[in-house]
Length: 358
Image (cartoon, rainbow, N blue to C red; front, side, top):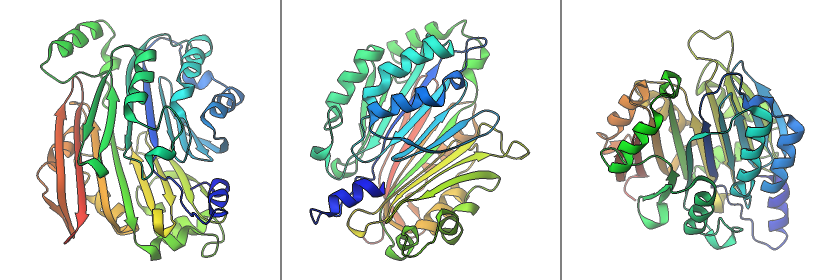
């Protein structure tokens, strides 16, 4: 996606870029007056040097600071930090620095939960440590957070990895987790949901939009692809790389009555035919994601995609997660694999779809 690394690779006649992202999300226990947004841009820039990426642009709503990066995105709210990076970035190497800043600058000393996830890389061996294999990632995460839980879902080449502090519901670990959360307060039970659509082998005609040859700027690519219509009411911060590649963040307009100001969306596009990849993510609340999923698929026309929905039981997204279990097909797509998990405090649905008849 990032033009500079793409050019470097093309010089060796290997026009490949790893579009698959590593996604880490850390929630801190609510503390009065503590706020991750107290961390300055310069402090974040220093953190991102460890990751091997940099800030390109910034936008914000009342509740969320959103950064477009040279390799994907970062979102910062009062007690949640999200970092999503592609290419050969090393996001887990910065966790120690983030925890230190959270405590010393933001006033957050206790981690409530962690989610680290990614799809299988197209070229795992090309990744830098610890991201060259999931076991190494888990080992590093455990060194920060103690004994987390690691899960692998789906078939080998299209599997999805997850690390979290959440135990499966009904286990002894789940009961202990519930006891630990007693007294944290009702704020810890705030509704939360995230849908992620990870698409590969996309329509070349759509991918051409996200090149400098076809679009003069990011706004033109955003309009031509219909990205601006996927979730109405978002303030869009977009960037078109040179010679190709695209990133955008969207945050809910503070004046929008339908979208809470904490809502965000993010899209990242690697358009090269031999490694085309698009990721879509949002925490918009919905009792059904059917319409949103249909708009995303119509916009990008992938041959294969993974969809995951994480939701708390008190979120409308929990119903959306349960509904996805029922779909063995979606339009021209057939379901190749599906798994549903009930964690302590969250439900997760994973599904892999491919176009007929593949």
